[in-house]
Length: 400
Image (cartoon, rainbow, N blue to C red; front, side, top):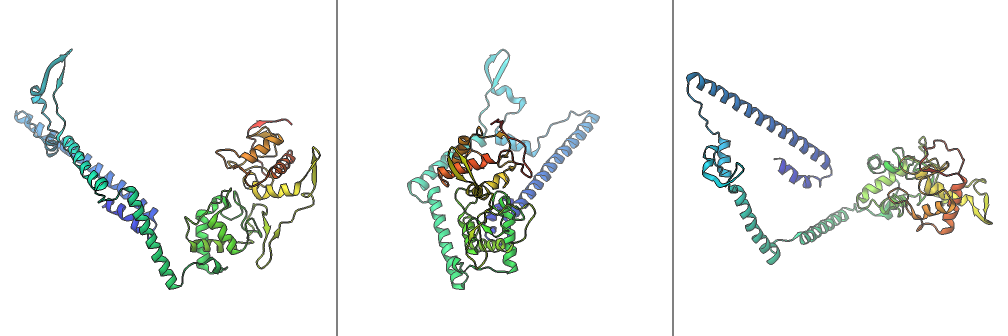
């Protein structure tokens, strides 16, 4: 029965109301309980058998009759399946040679093993004929192509049905909605897929704060949908279109737009461009202190642009004040350096090439050499500042 349930779980998963994970959990629990019950039953049977045999031996000794061994059903089955010679008759199969008192029995392979081996030979003959010679049955590659064709046909049927019913999703028709069911569906998807990078309150962690009016990739409902669907290359924001349906992405987009202004505690600083419904996006304001210019080797570098890049891109792993995030990015304000020597060139190289096996990806495809140099100089300017919640030092101490 468990095998039938497991085989049917794939078809159950096609329904929207059935959670395949829950079904699998139930099957596993039932299987474990059944196995425990079976083991207990076998153990109890063995105990009862031993008690019965002990009582029979006791009665035989009391009557002065030698107890006679009577093989049970299981012993008889094993004797037939293994063609085993009883210990009393082993003299008939002892070989002549003797190795320091060690004798060898001429036991043959059990019949069940021999017949199973012959069965594999017969199976291989039919397998070659049906799969490789006559092509009566499809090989794995052909079977994959058949299933993909069937899936494509089913997708076309669903599309035709939705078109006939007038329910086909169209991005051009996507608009904001306050429908409670849509928002509830979006909230459920957000809690399942998005909290790892944006936190449960959407205040931002690896990903940006989604509750303010600043957006990295567009703040209108269609831009939010496209960001979810296509992802953002070079970041941890993957394309969800392969995992989430268009309708669910639309619900998720509406939910994200609905939480604007919730102002969660500890939210990340604004990133990207200011957007308000019905207005044109504009860059986030930069303070006068951010627009100052520092001089190094006679070359001017705009601190405002570098800081905006840091807050927009780097703060996800290092925090806006560069205090660091445990497990993601180190503190950049102390004198300890984890992946370089703390020099301008070392920091530039880390930004450009990234650090394999960590969240620090290579940024050379996104920023040119001048921008990377400016960002490295800004990071150096953070030395000695006091972030709100700096993480413990990592790496080696470097005295400048």
